[in-house]
Image (tube, rainbow over all chains, first blue to last red; front, side, top):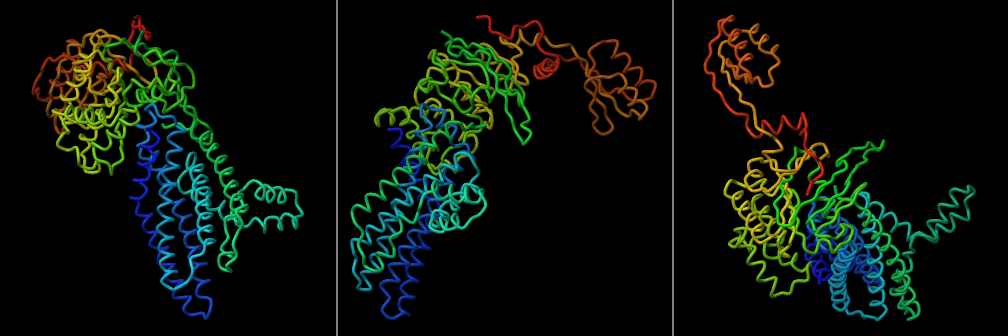
Length: 254
Length: 318
């Protein structure tokens, strides 16, 4: 009952955040712009709309996960609303996991709203709604769950600004894994090789979640690949949440 | 079994790059009997809030241990039957008073029916029944304090810890909270509350624990701890020149107040009063009044904080 109450409370608080609606509005605007851009190019309308549409859902989803997610936990600690909760028979891990699930619920609403809008636009333009498009959105949602977990981890021990910076840095580096490997092979110094190897092996590879190219070219992805990426997401998210719980357990509220 | 048992509780904060040590609590030993009201007194920075936070799991002690109703504070179930009001409480301001109490009731796994009854009772108890559906962001500081007391009682606790419950309240509000505390005692509950307002503490507490700079100075009846005050004489002088003022200051009196052309001094002996009168006469100043008065409770308390409470055991003798 406690967890359910906290999850719903987090959800209610998140959807009241102005940042949430602002980012949603921007995503909608970008999708509208993609329609206009598609109109300028012959024969690539559908590709542009789907490509930009998915990119908007991904980007604004990540920004929502980072900005809303971090501010929620940071606000609790900064405004001391956490005092009357942690002092009750509520385990700290229950509190943290409830925050995480509440944010995931918020992101589900966010992604659903953006997806519905994209689908309406695609259908209105007379294009097909393929299964691979749905799979792409599912993977975007998995990506957001992992980004949220990372944002939550940083917010357990550092300020909101640094949390946002670190989370976005990991997100960006996570998209450059192919380049990291090339940099490592081209590096001469042991330190640079060590750092690039560390980033390559330890940080999550967010490229796994990106199948926009397949969607745009109408290529389906296998169930095995889908299951593999979901398993990868669950595994990574579990580790990050575990570290977050350990960090939050040690946190003092003075 | 004591309601609260604290043994050797110490809290040291380390801050800054050089890890500067601040001792917030120094070897606190205290026992609180079941069913009593204990006043937790001390100036700002004495360690009162730190004590409450350690007991409620918001801080970890550097050394020592504590038990609430026989359960160690490391065990989360120690909070099942405890209510806590932090200092200047903050809540989710988009919720109404009803929604907030309902949410907190769910943390104790109270059924929907039970929550409904309990929330209604508590809102009436703290005088917020008419404000139940108003968002907390529209509440005054005093109303928030009352909601805070209500949330501390949502689980019908046996032990209640209140950190500055009377702050931000007007005299009516303070009386209401004092009455609630007395009512809790009549129900056999144990209440510990911290305050700066000595008269409030004196009026309703069974015992008082005085804390200063992280150390327990004494536990017992307030009048026993502080002793009786001194008989003072307040001398009101007008028109004293600078030389006269300098001579007055040389008498090293504790309390000299200048208000425009007037000076007010407090002396505790007849000999000192005589010296002040001689200075007035020598410098041609005017004696406006000479009034005997007893030291106020606050005066005694502040003096004892400086000198310590001698002859009192810092460990509870129960």
